[in-house]
Length: 177
Image (cartoon, rainbow, N blue to C red):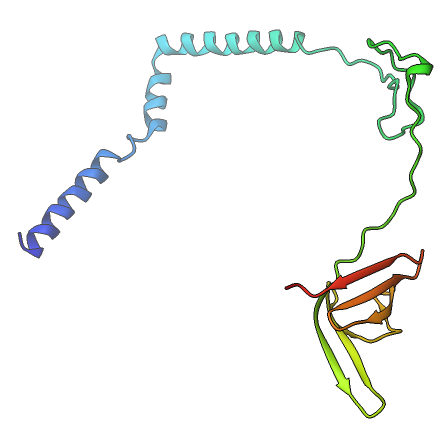
């Protein structure tokens, strides 16, 4: 087949689809002719009275409006709830284990020791620890603060020792091998 035959077949298909999906003739003209007949006029009046009957039936089924009643509980207040009836009996006081509240201990910071640097001078060598933290890379020496929570107390060849400012606990970070 050539391009001309493809074009003709495609055009015929489009035309057939357009004619098949065309809307029906104007329904308003057909409705006017139907209403002009006397037999249809009585049917139209009967259907109108049927519609009125259905509307009145639906109006009578509408629920009567009730007066406002304040709810027994407030879901936004914890303390105003009433007593709760429980289907499970409460355990005897002697069987209830006593739980001691432990003080909250914040987790250690997400600081890792990435590397070590050493400055050699005539007085000796001074080490610098390279730490990785959520704030970025930190270069710290002995006596520096880390994240406002720790103070560097010692910098060895392969480890750094951090002491908590709050409680004095020690955290030792070593190089990963």
